[in-house]
Image (cartoon, rainbow, N blue to C red; front, side, top):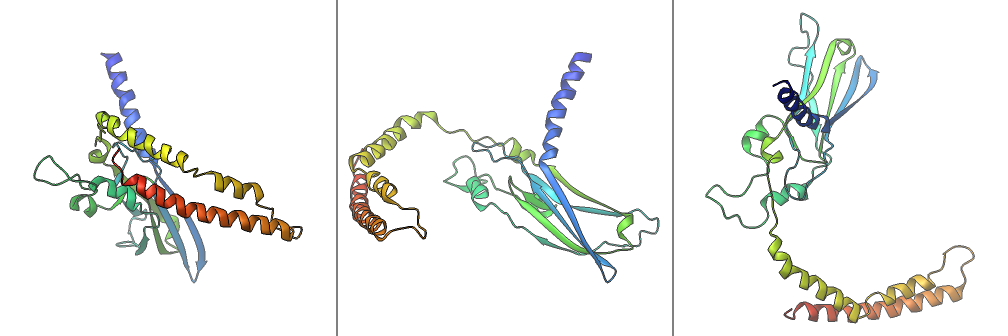
Length: 236
């Protein structure tokens, strides 16, 4: 029984370690006219997962407590909030394609209830709070960043169908064959070969050679674009 309890505690520690991915930092500028400007940044330091299982934090916000018995701050200072690093492409993946599996629609990136409790931070996203605080109040304050790990996102699973690779791989192979057949890279390499290190010592002859190579590459790219378009219209 003791070994089983220890195993459960170890598993719980692994889950609790996810809390460490909600990072925060604070800077204080001032004082000026008896006030300081406090800036607090909370961010999700988790990596994004391609196949579900994202660590998403819900209900992210600030808890500000005045340690004095009189709690003279009342409701606390007003804060200006900004979202400098929202990842639209990461959120969008939850609504891509057509959903077949019930009447409730696809997996929503964030429900109305989740949004009502505070900020929703996907991997790499952050929220910044900026507020003015009385210099006299500052020593008595306890400011904390709080949030919860979303079980809904953490346990979301997205499994690609392996059988489709037999159909998609030939398309990829054919694309590389087409690139090789039209000699896609040679003009680019020829430009690199004659590209001078531009500076006071660069000669007119070097510039002319570079201009000639760039002109040939431009013509080749135009022809290659037409050939690639014709390859794309063929049945593989």
